[in-house]
Length: 339
Ligand SMILES: [Zn+2]
Ligand SMILES: [Zn+2]
Image (cartoon, rainbow, N blue to C red; front, side):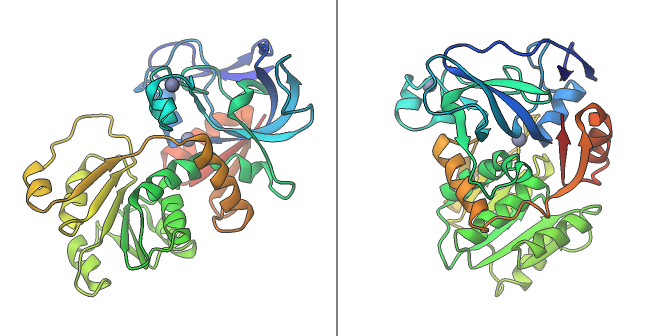
């Protein structure tokens, strides 16, 4: 089968022929119908994030069941499905307490074990969800990034009187806007920089009340101008950019809550005294649970979260290089590949 393989350290990948995966008794083999390129795939391709070699990345996907392991009763050949990427052990203390993405023995499809930039992928059946009949493969391949935004939004416990500020109008940021809207936020502000103009417009189309280009205006003043002179109650950091960390602290109201979603690949200075003196709550959020993923399938199938406008580019899997290119130059919001 055709696959995109990360073969060695450093930059690059190889499009090559590899054997179709052999499944174990608890696995299913999925014929991949659509797979998205994630922002977190980019550091894998560039070599910044190390993965076991050789490995096939790709974790935002959907497809049909091609084969089931001997212990698998819940699925049959031909089922339209999407799996979450978290493969958790179910037995460690975190799994027992419901924190599947903190599992001590976690494996993630496309990050620790072979993923879906391929014609076929094997996954444990316990990670798989069946699609509603009306859901497209492209919608289903978008559930992973939605769930990664949905979990932090749920953690923030948004109230109907809360103003929300989101840094970073990438896919996760715009899905955070949509999930915050679905959770009933009073007002949603999205902040981006020069070059984000189209993404900021898209965020407005999909639920943000105001968009701010912080390269052009004073961020604090611009936020206050649209929020009755007040700072927001909840700030989500979805850019992963180091400069954004201090901005989150500068822009949160006393007793407010900051949730960090974007992964900082370097350490960042944090003004702890302000967190103490202003009683600011700080949380992180990583991936999602099986339940978060299921709830996001419902959000999309009930039309509460839009994916169609998020998919800006589509390529054949063998042309993944073109997809990576439009991601790099920030032309794309979401790229979908077809094996
Ligand atoms: Zn992803
Ligand atoms: Zn576990």
